[in-house]
Length: 312
Image (cartoon, helix red, strand yellow):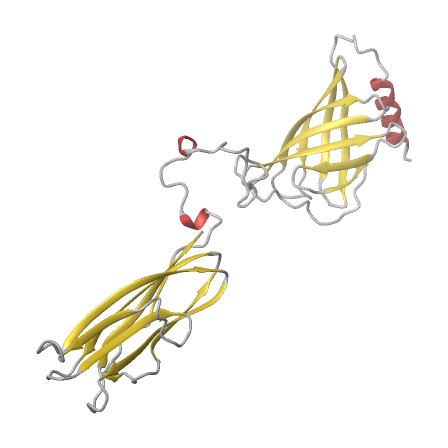
């Protein structure tokens, strides 16, 4: 160890061994530590103030054009080490970082950590190079996005009284946003099959989270007028390709009982499905029946389905 460094070690050891009742402030001079493995070098003016030692100085920010001012306190620990608590204002930008360091009197060096999660060796009078110490990720007083979760919050700790109007949006909540989708309209007239199901419209959407999907369907049945026969047409909103008798949209003309001039019957309906994350597909399936032997089928036109997803 060079003679000057050895003398400083003796001076520090002697100073920390002085009586805590010493009333007059006594400077130990300007001392230097490196925050290894980084190239940041701290120049500290240490002054004894009774049982404590005040610290002021700067971080040279690895020889940058601007230095980062710092203040702090040093104190002797019961285990014989000396603890430093340093508050550094990095420049430019004013981002604060706090450094905790402990040195042994024998080496005047020891471990350090900072409030940004960095750590290393608090090396006395060293200049071994390295990269600059990483800056804190958020400006002073700010909270890193995503750092506050239910773990940090007590039940009912945050209410509307604590939130500024408009400060919480759906995008900031840990839930999936509502989604809408539509199948579009049929472009022509469809002959409905007699006695079997036909998928008229299909809608597929990606479900991001558990929730519900409300599906709406509408369209227009077409019938042939006349006497002596019955026509029926019905559709259902279904996740299968088959008309479900428990969930159907229905129209009927019955000229065997009453003469009729009805040619079209509009229909509409809705159904709600509980959904899980993944791909959700829903159909508008339709079918028809008529009096045997009449030679034509009910028709369907302008059919569509639309859906909206809402998270639980």
